[in-house]
Amino acid sequence: MKLKSRFYRLIERFLSRFTDKIVCISEAEKESAVNNNICNTEKLSLIPNGIDVQAVIDAKPILRSDIDISDDAFVVGMIGRISKQKAPDVFIKAAKLLARLIPTASFIIVGDGEMRPEIEKYAFENNLHLYITGWTDEPYSYLKLFDVAVLPSRWEGFGLAVVEYMAAEKNVVATRIDALPTIIDDNVDGLLVDVDSPEDLCKKIVWLHNNQKEAVQIRANAFKKVCEKYDIQRVAQQHLELFELLIK
Image (spheres, rainbow, N blue to C red):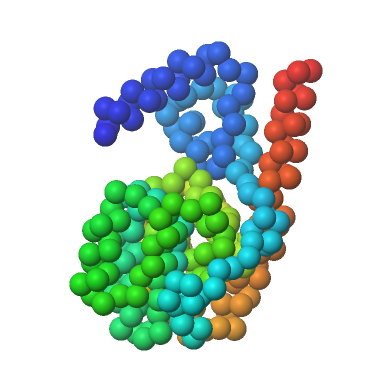
C-alpha cells in the first residue's frame, strides 16, 4: 500500500507541472497536497464539495412496510460501499451493541460491495434486523427512513454522504478522520467518534436516542449548514469564478 501511495504521489507531482490550478475538495485534501509537496501552494484552490440539496429534500421515502421495518422502529443506517474503507464491519458490530440497548432498533445499509456476505452472515448469526438495498438509483428514498445516519469510514477524501445526511435533516455520527471533522462541528451539527470503535459509535447513537431535545437542535444546525455551505449552486459558482480568473 505504501508503494502504491508513493507511485500516485509521483504521478500527481509530475502532472502538476502542466496545470494552472488544482482544485481541492476539502481542507484535508489541501493539507495533504501541501504535506506531500504535490505543487506550489499557489496552485491549490479550495472548493469544498457539494450536492443538490433540493434533490434530497424532494426525494420520496419508501414505505417501511416494503422492507419489513415497523413504524415504531428506531432506524440506524449508512450509505456507502460495503467495503473496508466504509467500515461496515464496525457498523454491524455497533448494531449488535445497540440492539441490546434499544430493542426497537433496525438497520439499513444503502449500497453493495465485496464485504456484503460477511456482514449479512454476522447479522443473521446475531439476530439483527438488517436490510441491505444493494446498488440503487434512489439512495435518498431510503435515507428518508433513517433516524440516525452514520459514516464509520476508516478514511475519506471528503465524505459526501455526511452532507447528504445533513440535507435530509438526519442526525449524523461519523468518524474523526481526514476531512470529516472539517464538515462536522462536533456536538453542534453532528457527532464524531473514534475510528474502528463500535463501542463509541453505539454510545453516541444511544445518546441521540435518549436526548431528543438536543438531537432536534443538532440536526437543525446541520441542515442550516448544508444549505449555506454545501449546495451544488455554490460549487458551480466557485468553479465558474476560477475558470474566469484563469481565462483572464
